[in-house]
Length: 384
Ligand SMILES: [Zn+2]
Image (cartoon, rainbow, N blue to C red; front, side):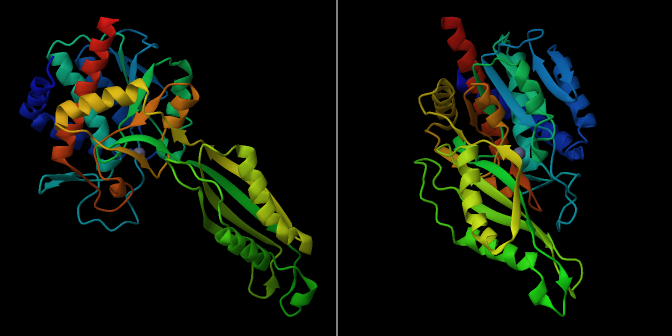
């Protein structure tokens, strides 16, 4: 089927796409509280006679029963970050449309993307396109808190050939992002009375020196696509009272990694920086709390080529190949050798902020692009 015809079908039913997006935003699906939105999405697919499975609130929907070998997996997360402690001009969970934009928590990250995918499937179903076992839609939980119970839980049973995740990329074709290793560093000194600091070892001072050394550190490696690694000390706590020399200070480091690095090389480097202070009789313990691997997909991969073609058909020109700064669930698929790209509506800097919004026009283009991609995949398979 021609992309033009599909796009027109989506434009004709734009109001339905807007209503779907607003419905998804209304659920206060903070990570861990995705029960209701999960039910809603399951019902959505049951209504178009898809087989729906739910694994701990994660939704898997396909035209074929127990589909595990889809050619294309469409993935998105249902959870959002909290809306409190942000100053909103609009109610975060009661979506408002102003100047062709829908405002609300999760509109950009990533209920707009989820709605675009769901709507693309519904439209194609309505147009009589047989998606059979080629297409599997997955909506997952707890991406914002690491994804282990979400995509991490369901990926083990999947054997897709390729995957697209609808996180906001401003409709660019994102083929990579850095990884993130979170470390907790505990500095242990010796306590003493605040009036006799010379008798103690002030853990805060030593932690401060380590942190400055981390700030001053110059990376010597670089990835052609992702650039250099980065690090950020984002949290610190230490001391009990002002008149006590603190014997303990803990800080957390977010180390963004590139594919050229390994867990060991990153830890060794961190040890070297931190250990310089150990010579002064202070102990530092480094604990790796979270490890999220970097993602980099070759532009020769089928998913990149198909998405390039299908978006060109929709937009009339080639979309940019991009990278993104944050981590996504893509790493779970890549670990399973399922080439994955990230493509979705929404400005990258609009996620996790107050007055988060999605442009209605972007929803239409995203949904048309997903529909065009699905038809490419289905068509491609029929030829084989
Ligand atoms: Zn997201």
